[in-house]
Length: 112
Image 1: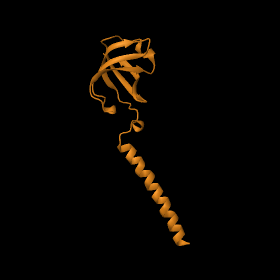
Image 2: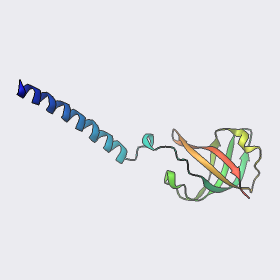
Image 3: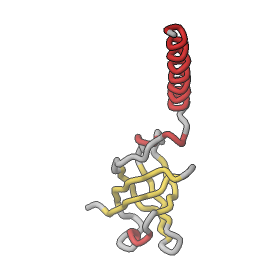
Image 4: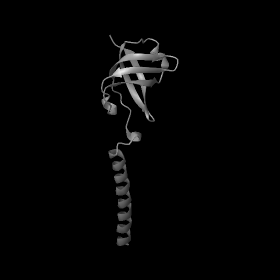
């Protein structure tokens, strides 16, 4: 009886270690699916606005939470109403979240 119990425990422990190892491997691979959204605020400057489609082009510094260098790129904005107070040339602070393969602006506001 004791050996059957030990065998069962060995099987359960082996399975648990296997699942744990797979999870660690997935995290270590840098899979997009496991990268969390970041609540960091980034700084940038508005280069182009399209209020009708809810997109903004920003020249921004490094996006450390997403491992991206400084560049100029267009983003979709989660709530296009946030763009009404902005104009080209404004310096802004903004927050991002990952949506599939894209980054989406969740918050944006002009700075002084």
